[in-house]
Image (spheres, rainbow, N blue to C red):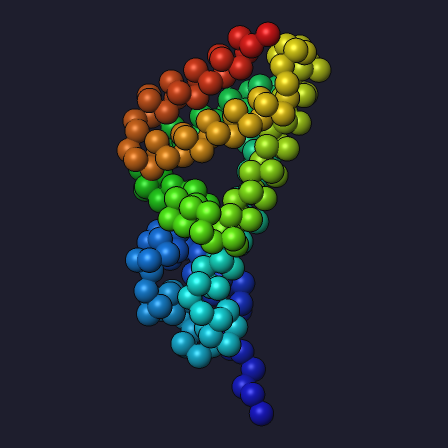
Length: 195
């Protein structure tokens, strides 16, 4: 008779996600993962499979937790453009420690490129979700007269998401608060100037 699992799968997965996020796929050792998850080697293999499968599950957990994060920057009374500006500018408000790990999704993409179909699919799904949320904010900004009606909302969303990814990498690389704010402000001014 098999022994019942004596750990919470979601808690263990969240712990593994933290290790992979901080250390990256290659640098995260199995022993480090097991220690963080507080489970034995056999329990990891029985529940998650090998290290690669655990990484993909951790990355999926990260994307589900952080994908489409724009909504958390919306506060009652803010205009759509204020929400977008706050979203792009939030890196300047992070601590150095928060910035240093960057985005686990971007880190995974730069590690694997397009060689890993699971990583690629997760990155694409998060991009689609994020861009759809940004596009809704752009359309709302147009409806409220904050942006010109001639702007293509889809292209604007793609531009803003690409800007966000660039800001993420700049923040991780040690850009100053002022550098991050200037880049975000410039992107906002460029969007407003489009006609």
